[in-house]
Amino acid sequence: MSTAVPAAATPRPEAADFLWRGHRLLLLGARAVVDPAQELLLVADLHLGKAEVFQAHGIPLPSDGDAATLNALLELAHRWRPRRVVVLGDLIHGRTGLTAELRQKLSALPELLGCPLELIGGNHERGSWIEGLPCAPSLAAGPLWLSHQPERCEGRLNLCGHLHPVARVGGGADRLRLPCFALDPDADRLLLPAFGALTGGHPVPEHWRCWLLAEGAVLSWPDGPLSPRRPGRAPRRRG
Image (spheres, rainbow, N blue to C red):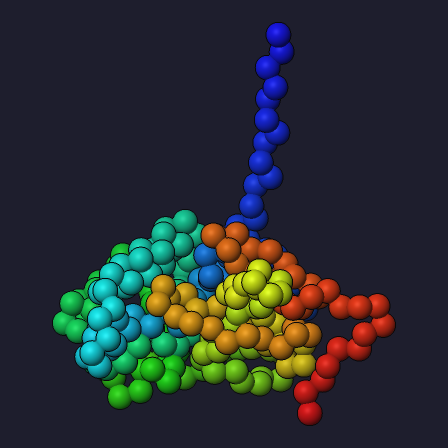
């Protein structure tokens, strides 16, 4: 008697190649970008200390989101061994959440990562001081322009955070909101999803190209997050 052997499950893609003028980036299902040529690991919008900020306003969120976020970052650094880790703003959620415990964790972070940690200042860092980790302005890294909020830099691809992009997939009761990488075709700009565990999201325009993220996998969605374009449909342009 023969025994049926189930077909092997198709492995879920953990990264997607992204090419911009010949420069290769890896978009990771773990909500980060790797630049292999420059040995960079890029993340945005960790919002550490968010639970403590909410607690200060009487909202009883559990104080365990930071551990998951930091452990995920350490896992990425240990796997990819970058030369630099750059946070594209909003490492913390606010001054109220910058507790002594969180300051201690941030102080130890570069050694745990095994490489320098750089922070581009975001709107949530305003009014805060993190010892040993000053907020830097937007900066160029090869053909990339790294910023927190969307910016234009002629001749470079802008990688930024701030907007926490999500894609709306499906319809009716089956509609999902999935975090995503989002490419603005009008501005040479790639938006990174929020890396933090306690973050919401903002839907991206329909005509943008997206890479959907779910359970560590990344899926290219070339025709926009809402539905495939109909033949002959012209993409919408912003005024």
